[in-house]
Amino acid sequence: MYVSELGLGCMSIGGEEKAARKIIEAALYEGINYFDTADLYDFGENEKIVGHALKNIRDQVIIATKVGNRWSPDKTGWKWDASKSYIKEAVKNSLVRLGTDYIDLYQLHGGTMEDPIEETIEAFEELRTEGFIRYYGISSIRPNVIREYVKKARIVSVMMQYSILDRRPEEEALSLINEQGISVVTRGSLAKGLLSDRMLKKASEKGYLDYSYQELSEILPVLKEKVAATRSFTEVALQYNLANPAVASVVSGASSPDQIRSNADAVRSNLLTEEEIAVIHGLVMANTYKEHC
Image (tube, rainbow, N blue to C red):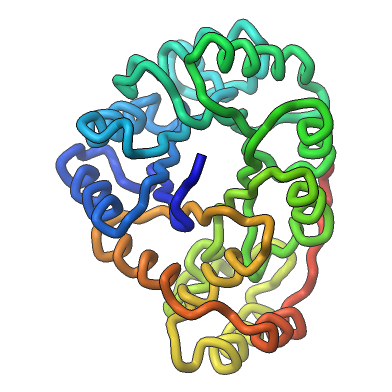
């Protein structure tokens, strides 16, 4: 299964179908074939919008969705449910909303070491055998959970948060995943907009992960000067992800067609040099995960 280096994170396209369709059409025009949604987004309405927009070219695109977060009956919250019975029930609902008879990539939307992991894997394997899904993967940033699925399951992908400001996967996950022939799909590549030309305008007073606001105010301008003086910060941020051999695709959200075009230009831009990557590593810390299971 071959996906474009840039995927569209559909959570950001909004609930107004006409506007969302324009974003999806812009993505298709830019050569994006990979569309990532989840049954959690807008109580499943996001899946409906994505399915409607891609219905006429279903065989030309990769639709990925996720399962595991179970809405309460009154829609006031959700709970985690990785049971076999729930997964096999939820997939049928996703298929109806997407208006398709198969899902290209079905992902566990999280996961903990407390889950009945063998049972969860059994559910995905059965769905694959039954033809409801083509492949399956997990969306997780928990190293111990990732190791379990790498060891026990036939996952083809791991979606994880990864960026210049969040280098945690480099320390504990990317090499292992790559060695097993599994692809990484990244999200959060722009670190909530901090790694864009808006930089500190997107900063919270609480900072970001291990970085205080003060540290961000010192690091970001230097990064901009050293590696993004002649190109957009978005280009540098997305190319940093793609420079890692484990990364197959960067899934980025977009709330307008212009943003799609900007992200596509960034992915098509010049690769980072080894020298530029070394400069980045010299300026930002190699963070580690605080929670593993």
